[in-house]
Amino acid sequence: MAAIVLTRNLQLAKHHGSGVVGVLCLRGYAAAAAPPEDGPRPLKTTNPAAMKRGTGGRSSFNGIVATVFGATGFVGRYVCNKLGKSGSQMILPYRGDDSDVIRLKVTGDLGQVLFHFYNLDDPASIREAVKHSNVVINLVGRDFETKNFKFKDVHVNGAERIARISREAGVERFIHLSSLNVEANPKDLFVKGGSEWLKSKYEGELRVRDAFPNATIIRPADIYGAEDRFLRYYAHIWRRQFRSMPLWHKGEKTVKQPVFVSDVAQAIINAAKDPDSAGRVYQAVGPKRYQLSELVDWFHRLMRKDQKRWGYMRYDMRWDPSFLLKAKLNSWICPGTPIGGLHPARIEREAVTDKVLTGVPTLEDLGVTLTTMEQQVPWELRPYR
Image (cartoon, rainbow, N blue to C red; front, top):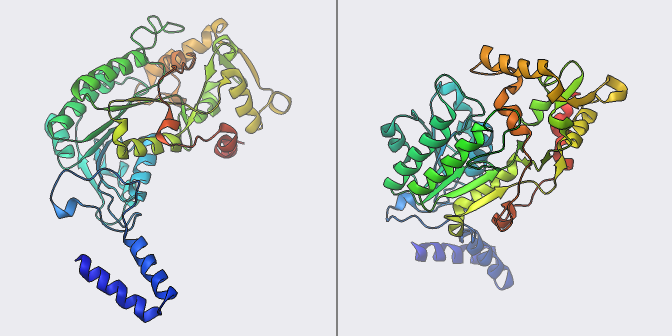
């Protein structure tokens, strides 16, 4: 086959010209046929259908067959787009109606994106979803508990089950999305006993590491972007009290380091291609740290809802029992989808300062160029003006 390609290139070179022109033509064809240097590891198989082909892009195949759990979520859409853009084949498990996931069909070329119905409590359906893959990405998570799934069901038992079955199926790379600030006993601020969400994420990390020792764990801070649950959370009318914004200690004792969703997605793709990332933990934080009070004030200025033009103000939520009652009632009346994402677990988590641990690698160690909030947030909040 190589001889045929070489002969064809020589014929093309003769056809286009001799001497320097022919050499340049031949060099151009050889460069186009060369595989990318930054590609993923070769698959551990002799099946020709599993080998790289094409010159890159959505219509090629780069050797990655990825199962993405949680693909219909906020981060999942960006991960699928970047996987498809680089020529990966995708298996996207879903648990709801197929109309929720069908829009992801366009992230890859014809035949590159497959869907598979599964249940997080059903090992057989998970095994079917990962048995053909060499990369598994777990993005399954929940901001609030429902009658069907508690934090432990999703972040601990579900994550461990996916990791264990992936290892049994011979998956080469497993990437798990956790959270920044995870710890066994977080300090309680609003909810007694501390954030159950952070506790479950911490326990989920331990269980994933036991089930798949070489798993790569990504710990993101608050993630912002189009259709996020950070900017839209503070822009929603239900988060405010009339035209005032209640924050823990007025937001002046909380420091945040939000990260852009596209940067997190790119880090996941880079980790899937980098064998050196196996077994490591990465902190996904933005390039700058901000006081929460400064961020929320800035958001409202961008939305043209500042104090001068709109009457906006900030106050300490600790002295407003009506707002705390509002959050509790919202989670009781609308347990499936709290209005505006407002519920006690979210308020507890938003008051926690982002802790970046020394010596733990960040997204920059995965080759990601970080996006600043000043570059992106004005565009994201423009519709709320």
